[in-house]
Length: 88
Image (cartoon, rainbow, N blue to C red; front, top):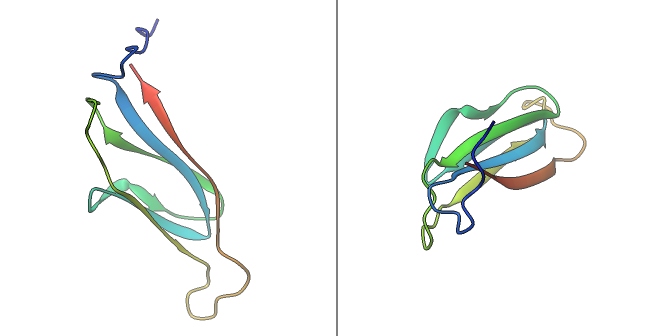
């Protein structure tokens, strides 16, 4: 059984989850993690933003979305969804 989330959010993990078509990258605070590179079409990607949340902390999340094939792109670029999740 997971411990309950802290009511004030202190000490919780914070995750960013998204789904980008066709290729994408998720950068957190200027760094690309191995989990942040999205390969394939409509693949859900979950990246750890913080493993110890504290009030007042800020983070920059940047998403790069590219439609393929890169040499001859067609169609649109989209981010199906983006959300933050908090985990104890």
